[in-house]
Amino acid sequence: MSAADTAELACTYAALILHDEKIGITADKIAALVEAAGVKIEPYWPAIFARVLATKNLDDLLTNVGGGAAPAAAPAAAPAGAPAKQDKKEEKKEEKKKEEPKEEEEDADMGFGLFD
Image (cartoon, rainbow, N blue to C red; front, side, top):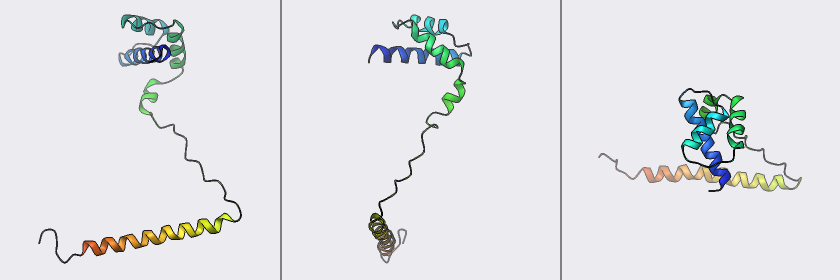
């Protein structure tokens, strides 16, 4: 783990501890916790974290993990000659989907039930 990763992780844990204890998150408090844990970091890391977290609601950050994902991109428009090929592919897929349930129904009706 790089020194930057270690510093980031240490400051993150310190901020979470302070938040959990309902103590205001400041650079001095983050630095004190990191020092108490015996982790050596550059002195600017606690200030960066304190400055960023002062403008954020930590509860919202914790409860909305993964909620900020970008929506899926729409497919690009196909060239003029491509739609016919794509339509054929879609028709084949639909035919396969229609055929599969028939096979399952045939397999399911074997002349006896599970509990007979």
